[in-house]
Length: 198
Image 1 (tube, rainbow, N blue to C red):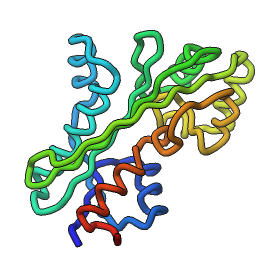
Image 2: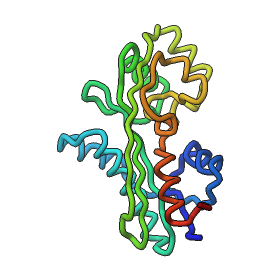
Image 3: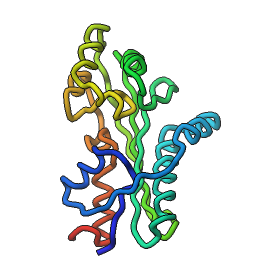
């Protein structure tokens, strides 16, 4: 079986692969995500291209160090009304994100790219539309109290698999994609490459 390396520091992505029965190693990529996002946004790149570029750069950076392995890079971005949302670094930033997403529908795109021998050999991206209910300031404060540090783990300051589900009225698309990985297409590729049993 080919050896797989996940080029991500995301516990959620690692947990998804583990739960699906995938054996893999982890290597955290050295990528300036902010610079990539800024450059692509200035060029008017759509959400899908930004997510793909970030996943590509992560996989490429790790593949250069481990050319004999399959390297999986992944990323997700959130867009609403032309604004790209990144992971909040502070509670006030998480509050601002939730206020901006409150009462509307936003698009979340998760992309995955696999590198081998320093070359991209496979890629996929999927998008989901999420409608958030109107949130009061008091509820946002309560929610952030409940989730604590988890508010800084994802671009929208929510985890749909947990109490973050209470923020939404409708989700149109794949659940795994919301968590940050188009898992079913990834598993299909891994079966074809015999990384997991067929």
